Length: 216
Image (cartoon, rainbow, N blue to C red; front, side):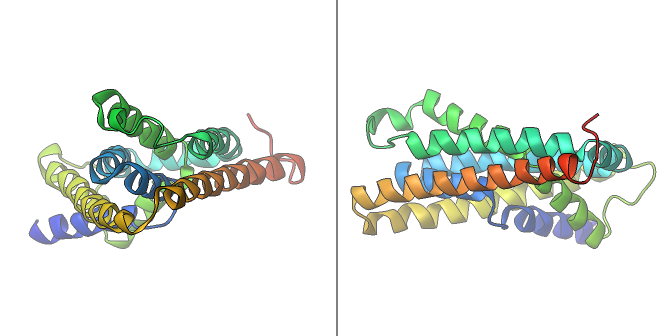
């Protein structure tokens, strides 16, 4: 059991590490608002990874079939959501109301933004599936709750540890930048997320138009 818990902790770290729209969002929040805002955003990503871990253990076959049957629709819709979030990131001025950025409402907004982005990205759940398969976790046909709970918690702890360290480092790194430089970084990260969203939707549209795959 200890080995499985250790593997799950590593899965949490590995699932958080790839540079994608969530990572870019966390980077932007950490550099523009500081450690707390970045970490809260990372916790939104952590929650998504935890949910995906539960799916990987209990509903892997069902989830894989759903993704395969609706891949084009997921890419189109998910890409649109990611692109819209990117537009808000690019247009926002994180320094306009600097004092209010640490309020509970702003923190909740960052948290929910990360959740929306994570759930709209099909690549995130596929990474979780691949990691669970690679480490040989979740192969049981009838997983027992008392056995998998420590594994799910360990995945969450691994992701939490990763985002805490990354956001702490970024919040200290931001002190070396001028506010104008941080504003440009905020703009550019938003543009990067828009490009990722457009690429996702573009792939879905290509599969529908040129490969003749129906949406429904």
